[in-house]
Image (tube, rainbow, N blue to C red; front, side, top):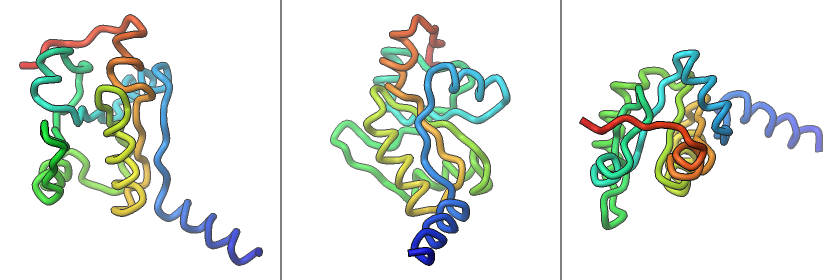
Length: 134
C-alpha cells in the first residue's frame, strides 16, 4: 500500500495536474502574467469576443475534428516549457477539460489550468468583459 501511495504522489509531483480555477482565481493568475489560451473556434471568437491578453488557438473544428501535431506546433510557440503555468478555456469548459487532461496526463505538462464554466459561464455570465477578436 505504501508503494502505491508513493507512486501516485511521485507521479503527481512529476507530471503535475490539471486544475479548474474559479473566475477570481483566473483573474488573479492573469494579473500575475500567466498565459491564457482560448481554444474555441473562429466563429466563437467573433461572436463572444475573447478575454483580453488571450492567445487564440483553436483545437476542435466545427465537426469536432482536430490536428494534434499542427496544434502542438503552435501551442509550443506560446508554452515553451512543460513546467510553465497556463490557463485554457473554451465556451463552457467541456473542450478545455478534454484538452487540459490530454496536456497534463498524456503530454505531462505540469501546470495546466482551466477556467471553470468557460467564457460563457465563467466570465461573461459573471459580468466580465471580453474584447473584440481582431
